Image: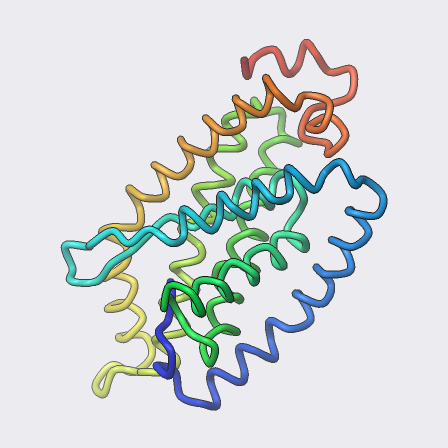
Amino acid sequence: MHIAEGFLPPVHAAAWGVASAPFVIHGVRALTREVRANPESTLLLGASGAFTFVLSALKIPSVTGSCSHPTGTGLGAILFRPPIMAVLGTITLLFQSLLLAHGGLTTLGANVFSLAIVGPWAGFAVYALLRRSGAPLMVSVFFGAFVADLSTYCVTSVQLALAFPDPGSGIAGALAKFGGIFAVTQIPLAVSEGLLTVLVMRLLLQSSKGELTRLGVLLQGGNKKEAAVR
């Protein structure tokens, strides 16, 4: 997912930066409101950001010759909603580009769009849909994290295909190649991230039940409905 510094053509890099900017600005406002209204949530916000930083900093070699990693954005999207996760993801990517040489400043917009915007929104949409349909909390959390992870790499494949179309088969051919490179490694990683996110959510149920209720993860007075997740 970390497109390297200078890898994208300047026009593409700028376009993805422009596309990402409104989401990040909106997220900053949402984050500011959350911290002002509920200063006690800063610890969980920090933990969500750290979860994303650690998971997305891992480099796991792929049999296709590339490398891949989890994203960690599903947890923050479920807890605080995608706009706030856009800010946490942007901070994560900025620190990684400056401190770990993962990604880059010129490609920050593209990386933010895939990891901090599309991934959280797609994952949260699946999570919310499952919850509204009556699915148990942990089932919803698993699929939310799974989709957040996998959709990030689907978008990265599209970004690379648009920038580097195949000479013979064009964008469609390039998309098939880039998608194939990521899919071999990313699908099992998405499953693993889903399971890890479920584990973290179970721990939060034991230590931060009141906070989860305030955030809407647990239903107020819905003990019977939530009993199935314990």
